[in-house]
Image (cartoon, rainbow, N blue to C red; front, side, top):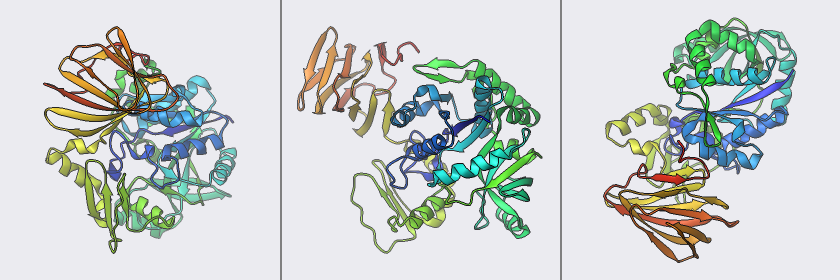
Length: 457
């Protein structure tokens, strides 16, 4: 049976704010200091389980960040399908099934969330392979985890054993309240749902047709109207009309053909502060719960307090209040601080930039242009720019002239002047950019030529 891995990487990660932000969510972060992000770990897990490259379903807004993280692992943008907006997991599952059926009508999926901690890939793959070998064609498979307390952030499954590590699911309850969770645990033969889904793509499509026919129809329309976006493929605008429904609620809770295996492995869903802090403690990571970038921070005698220092925000909170991040998000929106839901470093196809300082009259940025990359040939209606090279060597086009700049050298760009910054060399280029003018918006760009084809769209 051909197994096609699918990674769902479209989450916004707001429950781990402020280290995880809407424009740089948790799946793109190395939360445990292992030298790779959660997404990269998931990709390696998928590669260990199948000879087929994983299909990654992700948000359009994260495409360049995603591209920079998958290319070192041998993947390309051809392995990505972009959602124009987040619509929860039912629509993403439908997209994955449609893509696999198009490639292989008899193909089976192994769907992996992008934010799990599961370090033993070999044992994981053995369990999944053994489970799938017993699989019946019309079953939908899920993976269970032994529950340790009455959690409200996981789905619960009532299991009936049929053979070794193969269970029928007689009841599925998605994210119950605490009283229901306690009752389920007391009843016995209960597992948490890990979020992994397996099965024939055609079988899952049949379940979607049965339980969510309107959503499936809209997803099919969006899939058929997929279009190129630079080197990527993005689903059609019909996707914007889809209701945001969780696959677990829309399908799994209503299905009578569920089978399960148990993941008797070291596992965590790192989607919340309590789970992240518990895993860091289990791994022997610093116990004073300080998350800080580019700053030495010392904290003593505050084991129950979390301290997060980013470029634009300092958060101090007791662990007990971090289980409900919706309250903090609501506070930010209520006090007109929505900008803090995004990080100030932004990824582009040519590299990335970070805002170092800004007010009404100026913006200072640090630009990193990757080797052999270039910014589009562009102009600005309302602002001037000054570039200073701080690392590497730059090639700058101003109208019809080309200049070479070394470290310490600078150049000024006037309003409406065509310009392009290039790095034709093998080392990263770093630039300090100072913008000044009557309007300082990212939208003040007119593109004339771009190797990433952004001037076409």
